Length: 258
Image (cartoon, rainbow, N blue to C red):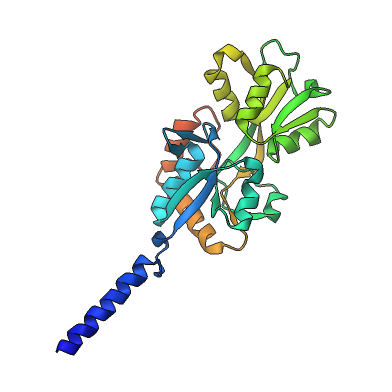
């Protein structure tokens, strides 16, 4: 009997050690590293030490449905997908438009929104639409849809590329650039948050380019969990609630009403 008790204690101790070391198969034992941005509200930003915004809160809701643990960190958008591909981050959350070029580097989740872009400038600008960008210095975030749109739509414009949204906004406010191409939601918030800068949204346009969370190529298990969780938060109304909270003026795509 004494030997049996000793055996049971040994087995239990081994099991506890395995669990503590993360040796179990439960995905909740592993903390997933999320690469995001700190300066692009309302989609992704840092507030009171918390990474929040529509995309990050949506990912948190998905993780809760799938029993996943997340740890967020900020980086430059231009480096983000490469960092996911190299394994530095498990997931990229940054209103990332799913382009064919980016799909060569990472795999994407199902669409959770669609790209809506704006041309932003200062009051009194002669720019009224994309034609007015010809010959002008125009700020874009490097390697974004805005960057691609400008160079393909207005090749005579001078694209001035920045690694993050804050630097591009500073350039527009100072007059270092004539206009700025960026997400509609961020452009509208720039107007509200910077009244002294006298910013305006010249024109907005919706694209058919979907947003998705990015993971390392071949990580089908994680991608499946994200997609399953996304279906759950759409069906229970969480997606719509977060969209109304962070993106109240943006159109709600078909199929996302819950």
